[in-house]
Amino acid sequence: MAHRWHNDLTPQDVTPEALFWNRRRLLAGLGGAGLGAIGASMAAAQEGELEVNSFEDVTSYCNFYEFGTGKGDPAAYAGQMHTSPWEVEITGLVDRPGTYGFDQILSEMTLEERIYRFRCVEAWSMVVPWQGFELADLLSLAGVQEGAKYVAFETLLRPEEMPGTRYPVLDWPYREGLRLDEAMNPLTILATGIFGKPLPNQNGAPLRLVVPWKYGFKSIKSIVKITLTDQEPPTSWNMANGREYGFYSNVNPAVDHPRWSQATERRIGGGLFASRQPTLMFNGYEAEVASLYEGMDLAKFY
Ligand SMILES: Nc1nc2c(c(=O)[nH]1)N[C@H]1C(S)=C(S)[C@@H](COP(=O)(O)O)O[C@H]1N2
Ligand SMILES: [Mo]
Image 1 (cartoon, rainbow, N blue to C red):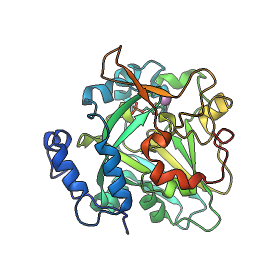
Image 2: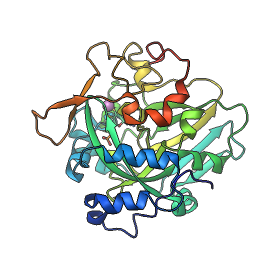
Image 3: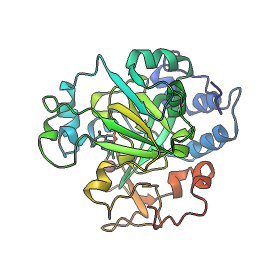
């Protein structure tokens, strides 16, 4: 599998402390052999960022509406979700449709597993050290067919373990989608862990999307189904409120949410009165992803 950058660090050979608090070593790892243009600008974007959030912040302040709409509900209730065994159905316009076991996926991906230090943003922001692999790698395992233009994702729907799904807050299962070129971008990862540990249930165990230039809700958790299609797929938040949540949902300080400005964001973990900071275009990944949207009116395709 050709990777556009390489990171010598793996969750197995680095302690969390050395990894997350020794910036020099992290950047040295990112600067290792095979570092390409994307890696370099990713490292640069990271260099400009604030410190990573604490494990406590990342695992206690969550959105996972299948367990309730409160920020603390996922941490309180997601523990009852069974994540083993776990299977992901990959279907639609692929050469090898089928049900892929999570262990099987991991065994294909382990050697390529990388550590990413992406920032999540919504009305707040967090910097999270993820482990995972490129979504592109999983898609090539299944073999993307010629006519595929979009990738649709679905979350587990198991009401007996997910108390929030008894209420029609969203049209369950939670659904998200990406355009194929967005899905194939090396910044788009499937995360299997944070801080060198397996992904906690509240953060979307065992497999969760991370799309660092989009608002948080695009990062669908606990994925059980991936469909390659030639049609833009329906997405949960767009179905719930299409005026407020578009298909693209790129981080864009110039396009406001109808009910609030997106020009600034508040850091989680900086205390309730932490100062707001300006939101960056494409969450700071403009160099990597702006070309995907060339010629598009981003106020229309929000
Ligand atoms: N299945 C599912 N995925 C989901 C959500 C959800 O409610 N259900 N919430 C989304 C939203 S709104 C956000 S901001 C991020 C939060 O991820 P985190 O809790 O790991 O920070 O998950 C996204 N993925
Ligand atoms: Mo969100």
